[in-house]
Amino acid sequence: MTTITTEPRTSRESLNEVNTLFPELATLLIATASQMVNSSKTSLLDAHLTTASGLTTRAAAGEAKTRKAAKTVEVTVADGESTYARPNGELYFSRMWGEWNDVQALRKARAESLFVLLYGAPGCGKTALVEAAFGEDMETVLGSGDTEVADLVGGYVQTPSGGFEWVDGALIRAAERGVPLLIDEVGLIDPKVLSIVYGLMDGRREYAVTQNPERGTVKAKDGFYVVAATNPNAPGVRLSEALLSRFSIHAEMTTDWALAKKLGVPAAAVTAAQNLSKKQLSGETSWSPQFRELLAFRDIEKSFGTKWAIGNLLAASPEIDRPVVADVFTRVYGEDCRPAKI
Image (cartoon, rainbow, N blue to C red; front, side, top):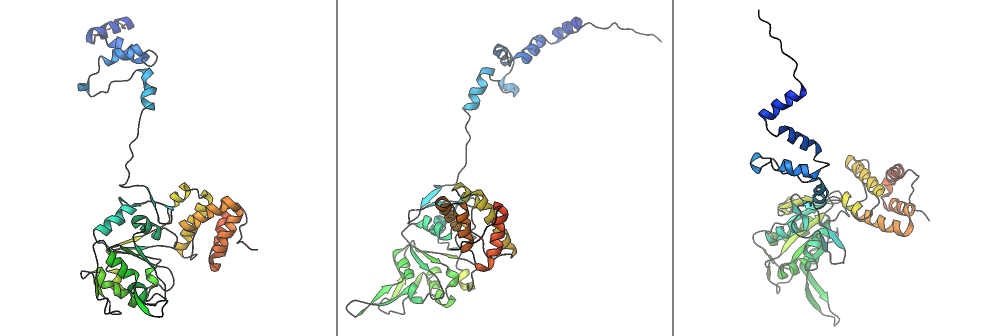
């Protein structure tokens, strides 16, 4: 057997062989190591990088900070504005309804004659959304157990001279003017009373005013639209299947906790409200503060202080739920919280 021995190669010999096989490699390695402290080395490296190689040309060390400062981020937003003025002058902050801005979605639903039913706890923004979408050019009926046909259709009103004259109700005015009609708290109105809207909400789009034969049949003009809002958990709420089927779009509105914080509601108050909302869903309480109450809390705290605002909110809660509400606020704020008392 023949034994072959090799002599150890020196570093210089290895380097010379590398330079022979890969010209300029050693120079490039040195440039790579020193480019962050010597920008001229970067230029040397750039000469060996082409777009065809799929590599990106490096920026000189002195340019790195400049490029970073000039970087911009594109944000995709929903069509339309983010705030809308309500008739009372207050601003409504739009939310996302699926992939749509909620105000724009409601306006599109009107254009397509797709009637909308909004449901949710009082104070979460149902009425505010409708007002933001349609402004002052709309009719409104606030429903209750005492709402009558005359509130929607109209009736005879006594004049100063002692006679009587016919005055249209909100439903007839909206149909004749071609504007939206908001039936607020629709679930509290007797279903028999609400049956008068059926003809204007289906293919007939008309209503025969039998209460006043001289008024005749009213036909809905283009632009007429019905949107309703209700709190499904309120005592006495009843909605017939015939009415529900005429609303093509149903949506639940909830309180936007993040928006409440953005508008200045203290984070602790929002946390307490969220905890109470979870208890309400589990049946531990029947009430929790919504958007309206939280905004009022914010304003009251500014004027009277935190403890005063908490006491006021507890006093405004249903009596049966006050012990639970007080306990939640006590735990969140770390001090004894009690309802306001004079």
